[in-house]
Length: 108
Image (cartoon, rainbow, N blue to C red; front, side, top):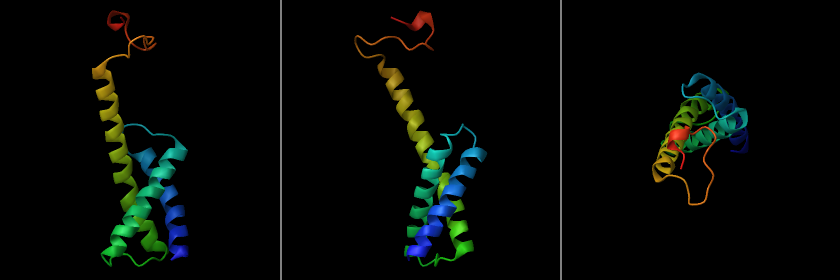
């Protein structure tokens, strides 16, 4: 049980890093991609274990990590885009300074 978790963490961190490099849309940086990969690997391991599809082992763990990391990274990227879009639509908070990247025509 503990050894499977250790393998999931190791394989998940590698799978998260690799998924961050391969997936289009930019990376969150090595550390966050690895953390999201670990989260995806642990979630996929739990889900596949509950379905009696995953029993552990090195190759099974690598497979589960490669299956679990990309969807978690994709979901977090979609949530971030949605969050950024919703905050842009709301406009700046009263009394806040304009963002330096915002064109002068849009600054208030």
